[in-house]
Image 1 (cartoon, rainbow, N blue to C red):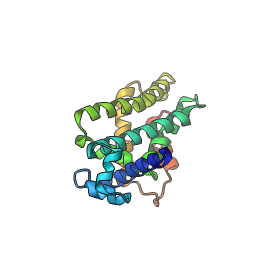
Image 2: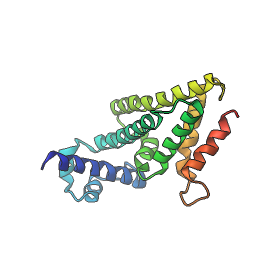
Image 3: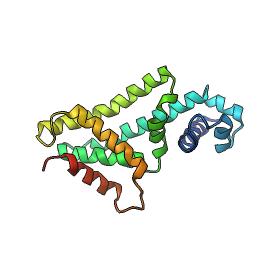
Image 4: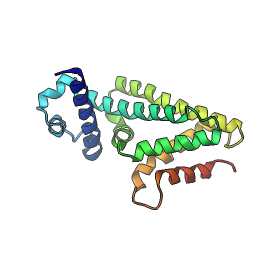
Length: 190
């Protein structure tokens, strides 16, 4: 097996695990379920991962890593504080509600299944992402666009944004971009 095939097999396993952990729950997903989803023998999973817990961590790390990379890339040439917030809202909603949503949903709903050391590693990754938001919120507060309590506002926004996974439907009245803009108008000063 060459390196690209090995990497793609690992990625396929992470993707399948994200879907299964979200649809069945981490505890109810067996190693056999994971192996079947990617056409492997159960024991072959352990060539790529030491344990099911390690797969869970990889799913969460991938979700946080992808959204962090997307946020940084999207903000690269944007200096306007309002536009930075609008862009972050769109990036977050697109990641949470888009085609790769399961990894982030697993992060939200299977947090307690992580081992303490894995939780610390994921928290460090999550903190990187939250720092991007915190900088954008602080900049917007300095510009007078939002209240000064940006730490609480960040937590409130994440709670609201993450809950959209429960009620947003792509076939509904709003696109992700429209939803992001309407949410922005709820907390930004005119």
